[in-house]
Length: 212
Image (tube, rainbow, N blue to C red; front, side):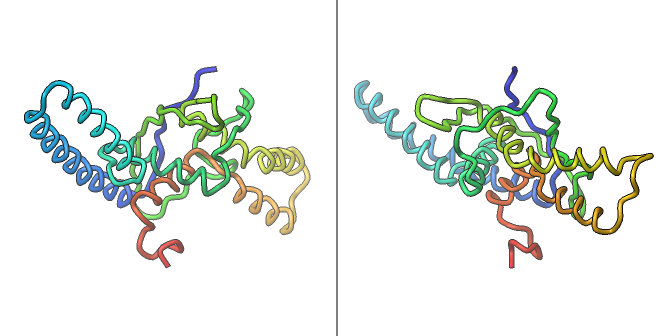
């Protein structure tokens, strides 16, 4: 099965604007660092340049890992997603979802909810993710697996609910509807994880619960 590495996620327009501004700032810093590096290299011999190049690559990697050098949207969301997976306890080996699983970024039974103006965030999460030593999969694939790991049980319950209370079947009472709402809130989609990563990168929106 082909791993999923590209995502198109509906996000608040202000959040996407904040992400773009952050990437522009980090891109400017990356260019400044490279300019400084080129100046240093001109003063070194070939052996010194090789050592300096390795040191510079390690410096850039350390800055990226710390979230201090994220010049592209994909790099920024990559960093945010890894943090979200760790916080949720999902940075570990997880089974692939079944082929019939549909986790296209929408909750089972409801549409994507975005307050205010919406925009589309397109990212590619193709960098390796290592859930355990000796095993690597694309980060995007881990996102899909993480969403399924959190959602498989409530989705099964929602399907059972639909079988019982779907059109032409038993009529649900208020308690049944409340139970369905609880199940819907328990579903975690790939879109939820990417939006959480966006918040981790740019900070919570003013007025949101996370900002209080």
